[in-house]
Length: 245
Image (cartoon, rainbow, N blue to C red; front, side, top):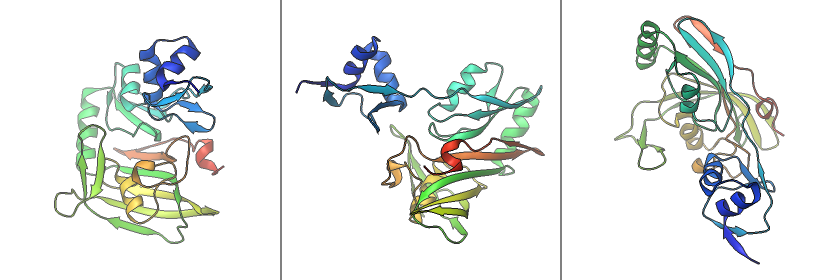
């Protein structure tokens, strides 16, 4: 059976450049059957039939002269949203596979106040996720996090080098050996929720980097609401969060 690098097979199948094919695979939206194609240069059968699942469009939740609140779809980088809105500046970021509320400042005055609020932990951030295992009781996690940013960012619990991180977990429902939980954080360390949940034995479904053993089209984490400077911005739960399969 003939084999070739995945991005070259995809390029041939779709009639696109090798560069564009590699970018699509790196973005995490190319599938062969039910499995995500993760490595663009990995050898694969030249007979492979690919499927590209393009992300949904970002929706504006709220906008005025000072702020834009966007419901970010999964598989879209926060900076891509910023590029789409040249008059606005990102106030924070969500991981590429995380969906939900993303805030951008429009006026210099508001942006300065908002960034200061984030620095001083005066922002209420609420998430919802599906995790591995059964979560029956609330959990409070106070474990310092250290992030290594060589190549792709990776965070870990590190009492010596880590920065303070606080996460609260509240169970909602259980389906089989998966649990739906609500999450509140007062700090915003890189991959904080993912690392803390993995630390207590409940990695987020689809998060192979931090120990999930379940295949999913994305990491099942959604930013449901953010309260900033007296206003709350909310994004409805997408279908893959409302109910696990």
